Image (cartoon, rainbow, N blue to C red; front, side, top):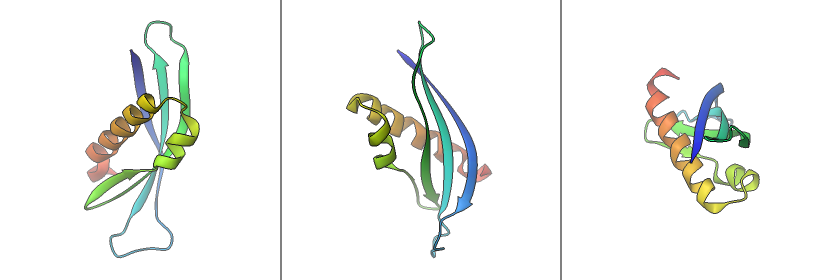
Length: 89
């Protein structure tokens, strides 16, 4: 069972600026094997968000994680993480 650790490194407005004022949050992600303590995956995932939704960059995750099941889990968890923090970013 992996453990997920997220940390927002930076937040900036998307260029070119749009009507929704889309922001990009760069989230440092670590996936750690819970029993062994080995780092399975470590990367920075860009996540776009605005008032209507949160959208992690699927291509960035797919290019860095080989297993599709782990890709889906990371996308789900990073989306939920940014969605809860959105009012404070």
